[in-house]
Length: 143
Image (cartoon, rainbow, N blue to C red; front, side, top):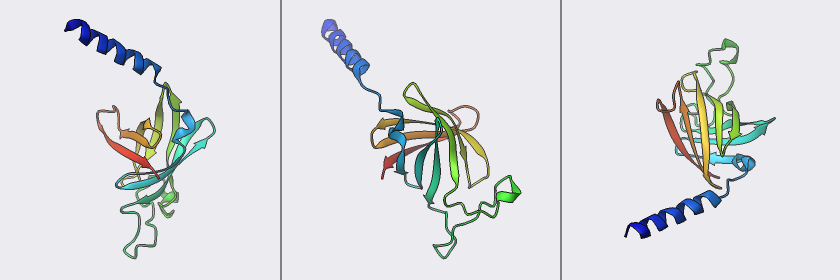
């Protein structure tokens, strides 16, 4: 019994080592989760994303984009939040996207950001302050 468990474990380990990483540029495109829709694009050697839609992006009329009123930079407080590049500086390293910055239009704060493609149409990300444990995760589907 022990030999068969060991054999199965070794087989799974060898299969995992042959699994191919998705190319770094595979993150480029439009992604949606329950509360947000973003467009990821390449910016030099890093990746960024602009905010296309969020559940609380529009004024009561449902058409007019809210303004970035909580931005710490007073000069940017009159800009619409729709289209804001709010994820920047993501670097692809060892199969993950790391070292990114997430600007939150909800509170005006900037958070650390990372992500990983779980498949060609599945992306998991996490925004956090300090350590990843102190953050929030999002699961995205390619649109």
